[in-house]
Image (cartoon, rainbow, N blue to C red; front, side, top):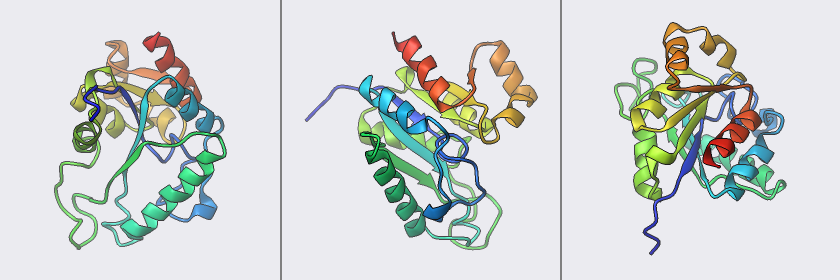
Length: 196
């Protein structure tokens, strides 16, 4: 058994890997952010695990179910195969603290900005969080990364431009707790430059 710890790049899904679309579940509506597959391939070739961590409160709200999300992730993997790459693992939070009225409504430890999904992946995949990165377009992504002890990177795609205007995010940027990049390809170039 491989006991080495791995560095990972955790990626938010909607607005980071694919074009933002509220409650995306239909593969026919899926489209990569330009250059995203190539960015994932570059990170993989550099030795990083690539792990998707995504909030999917549409499950709690009753808009779709976990099996439908799984089918979308299978479609995404199939698309990435055309670029000779793949995602190592997908982690999903189906919860919402108040919306809906089923078993996925209420408090949880996995919804970003909590770091639960990152901690779970670290246990499952033997990830060294201190040498890993969290890339996303929302403050919740950055909070999850900071909470897990990763290096957070904000992309301006999706909700990223609006996120840049938030006071907490501006403060994190000034104190160099986060990096800001135009998109996932730029974030990959930044990460690879840091990694040497």
